Length: 188
Image 1 (tube, rainbow, N blue to C red):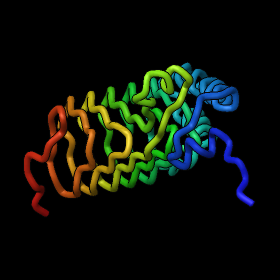
Image 2: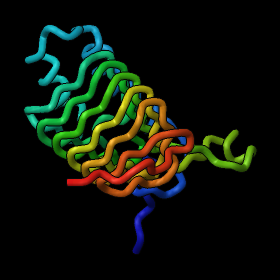
Image 3: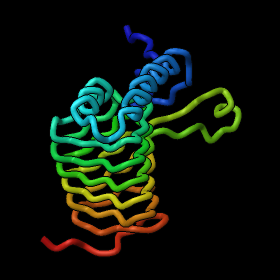
Image 4: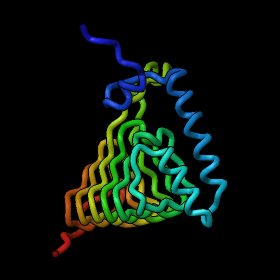
């Protein structure tokens, strides 16, 4: 017998879901972490790392994220070793956001896993969808980049400042623009 999935289970498993009180309560709980984290500023590194460990699904001890940092469902975010996220990053992680090793993310980057129903009546009723975002190892993302739902950025790639990424980017390329397009391959 198939059990009924909660709206959170639908969301994290990339099945259309509807906003409800369960999701609102989880958002509020995470916002408390965010407020405390961002109020610390940049100097209390030890306390910031402790809060991140409690807030995110997984974060390697070598990772640093500079405040302000905004996320909605922190438990859906994993960040591997030696990655760095600069000031003012926003991660809307309704689906999983997976950030690999040695990733560099410049200021003002936004990562979105959520979208809303095209049908205006469904959108009005709160129907949404979520698609995971994967940033593979050794990626460099320039400032003011927007990454849309369902995107994977391949290993070693560089994304130019101001880009809007609406499709996956292969490994070992430089890509930029709106929409983001491959400019050249990176030679090893």
